[in-house]
Length: 434
Image 1 (cartoon, rainbow, N blue to C red):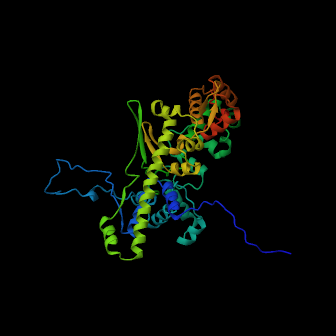
Image 2: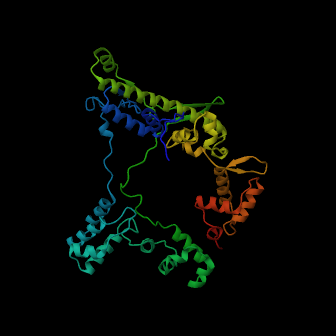
Image 3: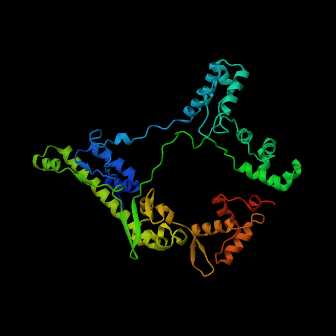
């Protein structure tokens, strides 16, 4: 028979408060995301004030006519919107002396070209939409493909390469013939077999292949404004000053927030109600979260750069293996906290702007028993391949042996993996035939 009884026991349980959740969220934000978050919170809570950060300063030139320009207007320096690819192509079409109907077809097709320059639209739909005959549609396509840059308006990669070859007066002989035969002959490419197939010499086949690889498979990718520019604002800066490491958090990514004194005094003196007391508590919680974020970032970044101090004096080749566990133990934090702190953060170093996560790297054992970073091995692998003979490139096994001769123990499979990550072709595809 089952009975019911009361049992008293002790249990330990970690409860995450709303303020702790907010601190975790603030820690994961980048500098720009933090500013946007605080702006939204300050707009909703009148007790919270966000200090404006003046990043740029303007000094008017003495040559400016003060009567005409009595004060600096930043709108005068604003750039207009860059033209789109469609507008660039349409402007070329409208300068031509062609029938109005043909111009209408070409302009419509220009609007169907994607960001890479390819015409990705069903021609039957265009024909029905504009009420065209097939000859009129083909004339519009021919006109579109005659525009700059060469290759625009192609319907596939093969047609794109052929358009560029046909419009190039310095095109290498046999290049058009090889492309027309199919792109599968180019990957992987073997000059001897290609030469025998087309009745040419290996030297001519190699020259044609190198010419084809210099053609642009996406001729319009850098034309027109399709995406917004992505800007990186570093969260901190680090440098060596008189042999000592100096790390500072930048104000642009770590804004200062305060409580509005007037509102705070009014609440304390007038006791307007529970809602305003709650708003004051929320504002103070945000301020504590921002201050905690600043302290955590400073501790974590300082610990990382202390471990990578050789990087500051010798450069990227001196990076040492590092993982989250080592930093977490050093700063007495959990690995998840360290991961949140470095996520999306950037640091300005003497060698440029680096993502903080770039300083965490796996290690490879050397002959002496020490560890070297995978980044340093990749950099050395790239240097060896750069100096190899073009007609006798190193195989992955030979690269592994060369690195082992330098004291780096690495297998052939790891060499192949690093080579693929560096986007370096295999030895057969790197070979240049005489």
